Length: 374
Image 1 (cartoon, rainbow, N blue to C red):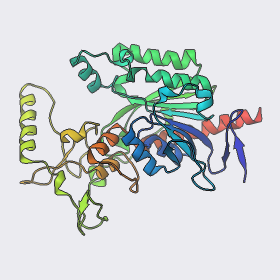
Image 2 (image 1 turned 135 degrees about the vertical axis):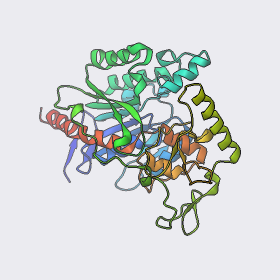
Image 3 (image 1 turned 90 degrees about the vertical axis):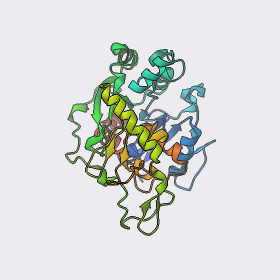
Image 4 (image 1 turned 45 degrees about the vertical axis):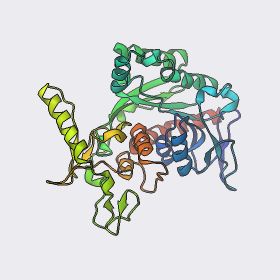
């Protein structure tokens, strides 16, 4: 079987994979899914949250918390590392790789995150003593390994946070200090999934490349919620506890209580009268939803599903949340509803990342081939 190597001491990559990558701030693996679909092989994973680790390990059995191990005769597994800040020597503790992937924590930069921290009198952005500094962990690993490319993902507010100064710091670190050729783009996931979700994606290449982020064309089809919602007609297999019985009806536990529904209606009415736009979001099959957030577990107010006149609305099930984020139908959800809502709300939209990965992949392999020939 033909193989190529990358880096001076990099691992061999079989012809099943055209490049290797590491998955930082991995969450539940949405970014990994997108890059595996584009021909990549994951060689290192870092995620500190134990519940996210559980979901990640259930879906990527080659990556388990603890020491690296041989999963089978053909696949060498790697450990699912926890806190990235505990990596003292990235040159030795992280294997060589072609692409670095990182959806670094967004709370210090998100509109909701900044508002919450302001109300509590707490610092945000790079003044946040914990989350805000995690970008510099990415910089530390880029310095140590000089991968051929990287993809960073964050909320769109990153560009405007602190009047643009936060993004200037990031650009200066990536472009001027590290010397990467950097492009970025804000993409709305609604071209891929029925959800309005705008995120910034930052791509960097080490050296000259023909990569042009602006030539990535979103798909023409704009799906609606009917592609996500349980049909409840027996056409899909029942999946307890989300759906029940031969018709796979949505579990009644996802229907709002009269008390919560009355509260949400009153809350929306109060803000509407005050001229604010706050309130619940009610969808049916032909709609596109608001952004799914990590707080969805609290009351589900941003995306409530209409069950018809005279019926109380309901929350999305975790399986519907997985579909809304573009995860495959066989993706395992081994955690509680509360944790699942947090995990999908914090995740990337898989098909968006896959589109970016496929756009990047030819340029990554070109740089690998160029290095091998020199």
